[in-house]
Every structure is written in structure tokens, then in C-alpha cells.
Image 1: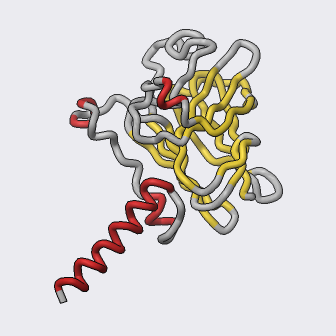
Image 2 (image 1 turned 30 degrees about the vertical axis):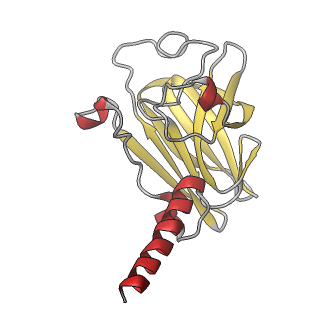
Length: 200
């Protein structure tokens, strides 16, 4: 009996471990996507945060997506070109990297992605803004070492729109689009960055 219990436990741990490592949905999407967990390896995770974690959930064809990000505020600071420098990679939030969980294959900003877990980075520029998608999700947000960069799976330009009024705290919202697609709008300061998402 004890041997059977150990066998069942090993199978469950194997399935959970595979799901955690690959993001492949071997269990229901609601469990596979999981909560937006803090990075407990960072001392900042043990106190109150000035930039709380937030979650955006959305249906994606017959699956789902979840976006987890830290919500920094302006607090009187200039953002793009200052706090977030031009032509430098930014984690699209605060603290942990902005993480995207997909329960099915999808296209994000024209980049084909399999079901799984990804970190999103943005490189704002005076002329063009670029999205970078990375398979590494367990590093601290601003750790962009060569080892982390080696896990990039794609990059693409993204549309940027001017907002009529400033947005104090970074806010991501789902905006409906046509033909089963959606847009994820990242609003901060007077800027909206749009990620177009569709199932494939």
C-alpha cells in the first residue's frame, strides 16, 4: 500500500513539475496558469510593495491567458525617456518580469508562441518600440544577463499611441478586437503600448 502511495505521489509531482517547467497544460488551464506569485528570492518580496502585483485574465480561443505584472506609479517622475530610458530593455512593470501564461498556442505582436510561460520586455525608442519575448520567467525583472537573453524566442515592433490624459499607475487592460483577437493595452504616463494577441 505504501509503495502505491509513493507511486501516485511521484506521478503527481512529475505532472506538476513538468507543467511548472514547460507551461504545457497537462491540467486544467485555471490550475496551469496559477497565481501571480512573488519572487521570494528577493528581499523586497517580504515587505509592503510600492508597486503591487496585478493580474489580467482573458479567454483565448478555447484556452486562456494570464498576464502578471507589477504596477509602478509616476509619483511626479517623468517616465519614458527618463525613469525608463530610451533604447534600453524594460520589464514592462516593476519587480518581477512581466509574465505571460498561455494555455494554448497564440500569436503575440506577430510572434508565434507555443503554450507556456514567457517574460515580456519592451525597448522604447524615439522612433520605434520593440517587444521581446523570453522563456526565462524565474529571474528578477531587471536581470537581463547574457544567460537570460539566451532564452529569447522572438521580438517585434509594437504600436504606441498617445493618451489624452496621464495615467498615474501602470495599468494593463484587455481591449476587444475583431475576428477573435484581442489587444492588451499597457497605459502609463501619456502612452499606450498595444500588444495584439490571437489564438493560432
